Image 1 (cartoon, rainbow, N blue to C red):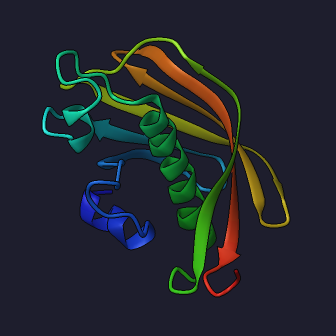
Image 2: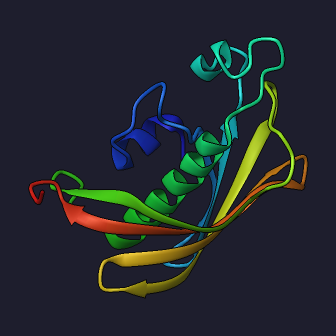
Length: 146
């Protein structure tokens, strides 16, 4: 699935759309995605100009966007009226920094679902080495609910 297709599933847009490609997908089970970390990412202007490191919070956000893609692709949801919210992080660990030029491979696996809340095991690798892992929670909500 290309970046243009991804934009049909996620409401995010540049510079906050953090998934470039879907590499693999198993309905209601797992998804593998790719994020190409480029030198011109806006975050590198301040994090850190002399030693650019991709922020951990953006790695987690990319992983959360992958969970949203897994949900929306698996469940034929009404994307006009529903949003997928990132609602929790457990057991997050950062193992290595991510730099410009790295290609992040993100794997998310559905662990559990209760009503409209979903729990995922997620990991992010660069060159087959885990740089981040976490359990992520997401929830489906109507856009009109406040």
